[in-house]
Image 1: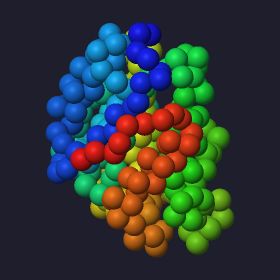
Image 2 (image 1 turned 30 degrees about the horizontal axis):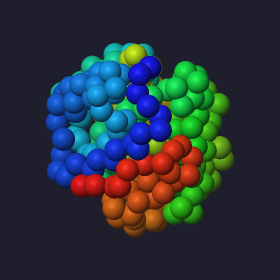
Image 3 (image 1 turned 45 degrees about the horizontal axis):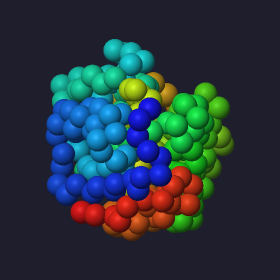
Image 4 (image 1 turned 90 degrees about the vertical axis):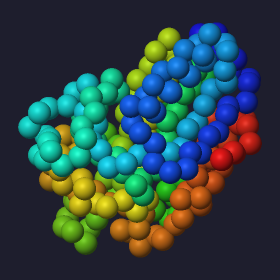
Amino acid sequence: MSSNPDTPIEWRISKGLIDYDEAVTAMETRVADIAAGQAPELIWLLEHPPLYTAGTSAKSGDLLSPDRFPVHKTGRGGQYTYHGPGQRVVYVMLDLKRFNGDVRAFVCALEDWVMDTLAQFNIDGGRRDGRIGIWVARPDKGTGHDDKIAALGIRVRKWISYHGLAINLNPNLEHFSGITPCGISGHGVTSLEDLGHPVSMSDLDLALKSVFERRFAATASLRT
């Protein structure tokens, strides 16, 4: 692990919809550069066009509409997820020496980051035993019913993370019906808008950065 944890982390916000394969190639290149000490760590905020991704644990039966959107096999952990406009995707290329190489602690930190960000908008997101991601209780839909508001899935190469998380701001929630999200049935998917919080993408980005700075480390200036 040759990157310096004292070097400011770069933040990048991409406008428009970013092709998934191009994003993966860019992440892999950046991870190699970080590991070689040739680039700073990076938090990359973006949106993708509508697509499904299949993680390393994806089961074919969970792809309910295989011809609906492009399907991308990916090396991140997890099962099937949806990405599309109105969803803030956050790719985290960070050196795990910040967490003494403890991947579990790193994932917990990402979850805490999402939950604290949602709390800025008075949304009580939380973990659920046996269910990856961040969930919101929906008693209006029945006792014990939860909806998923954020997904997580990372990969680690040379002790640098990539891939990351996705928070549903205002995507078309019907698009999730083409998969069993993360292999979990019996619960739904929600968004900030669906919960009655009309938040702008820029407001969500600012909250993400503010919470990150408190939880992780000093960062470079937010740039577009």
